[in-house]
Length: 353
Ligand code: H2U
Ligand code: ZN
Image 1 (cartoon, rainbow, N blue to C red):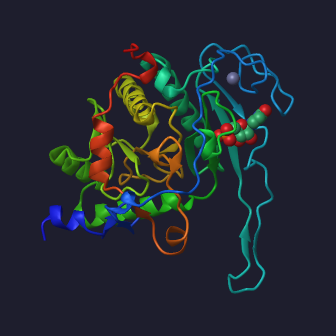
Image 2: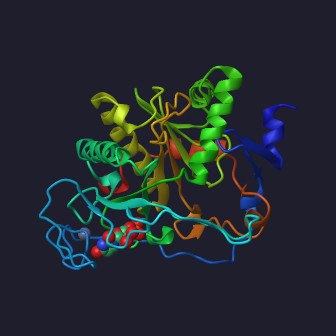
């Protein structure tokens, strides 16, 4: 069957990175909606908020005071989910793995992207974002060198709808002893693909998408942003490094600037989709830091935004998604076309008509 016919009907798509299937139901957005509406979040108007625990010079909830920082700032999370010092232990209470637990050591940090309370990545300059990329790379290297750390997760939650506690531009780094499930699935898939085809999964995939162009959203010399063939979230984006690099540390200055540029392009288009600061969870997937060689690993980032039809109508991952399989309502190709055709100029910078 031709893709055109297959993709117009309910069908399944395979995610080769996780080796999981998703259900695509192209016509489902036509159904009426009388469900929950979110309130669209407005941009903060203050460049400095005396009540904000991330603004320069302010006191944090944990009691510490932020320095008067002028660019980026990183600190150990005052309410860290993971801690460096834990007593190593493993317990199998039933002897059959039914009540199994293990100690887990790790470290959690908070990264402020800018001293300006009212900015977001989309509203920062490429040079300012490049400073964040440098900080991510330096933190990755420093945390990776800790002997008890085998995996470093850099991420950002944006918007109240994603559980972000503060509009001040910031992200987090959680790093730990064991490889968590999502990167573990991707690692096993990349290893299996490399064994079977003698090539890199994401290098091959990127080549296909560069030829097809129907899912490409934005590109520069060093990075490509696309709605992956197997996207689950309506406006999900996969950001892929054009070079076969295992992590941020291995990017040269030009590549880092390319990353900063594409991050601005993605977040600007996202904000322009519904003319609101667009909520999402994003994060980088990089090779584990376990002192093994990881030739199979290809640096990439996932953007998972929750919105579906407007600033106030979100996609719920409930019911069938919780119990059976993730499902999406618009095709990835339709979502990519919408995102690609949005202005590359942020709505706040557009002249009033
Ligand atoms: P989110 O907004 O993405 O939840 O991140 C904020 C993090 O900042 C959160 O993990 C930490 C919280 O524990 N935090 C501090 O470390 N110090 C504070 O004073 C408040 C919040
Ligand atoms: Zn602030």
